[in-house]
Image 1: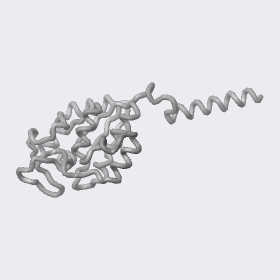
Image 2: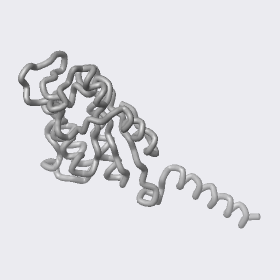
Image 3: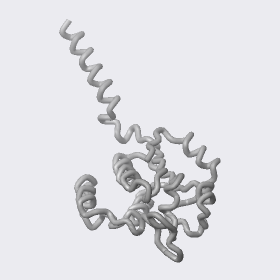
Amino acid sequence: MKQRFLCVMVAIFMALAWSIGLGTQHASAANILIHMKTSLALDDAQICAVPNVAWAAVKAGHMVTILVDASAVTSVTKGFGFFRRLVGSDSTALDRAPLPDRERESLAEQMGVSLDQVPHTYGEYFEFLKKLGVEIYGNQTMMLLYKIDLARVTPAVTPISLGKMVQLFSDVDRVIVY
C-alpha cells in the first residue's frame, strides 16, 4: 500500500513538473509569436513590455517572432511621433523612447548581463533582439492604411503581407498579445 501511494505521488509530481516546464526547457522550446498591436502614443506600458518578454523567451531557449501590427506600426516608422507626424524626422518613436535606469538595472540583473549590455532606447532594444535571432515583422497593409512609406520603416522591421501574417499565426506554438 505504501509503495503504491509512493508511486502515485511520484507520478503526480512528474505530471506537475512536466506541466510547468521543469526540466524541459531545452527539450520543449516553443515557437512564440508576440503580437504587438498598440502604439507608443496609445499605451507605452504595453509596447514597452514586448522586448522584455521577447528577451526572456529567447533566454529560456524559445524561438521568438514579433509582429508589429495595428497602430504599433507608427512606433517603428521614422517621422511618426507620440501624437503627431514629425515631418523630416529620421528617428522612430521607439528610437526616442529611453529605457528608464531602473528598468535597465532590473533587466541586467534578471538576464544576468552587465548594465552596459542593456540597450538605452527601445529602438536600440529592437536592434538588440534582432541580433539575438528574434524575427520582427510589420503588417504592410496597416502601414499602407497609415500612409507609411515602407522606406521609412526601421530596418529592424520587415513589412509583410496579410498572407505571410496568416502563416505566422498558424506556424507558432503560442501567441502573446500586447
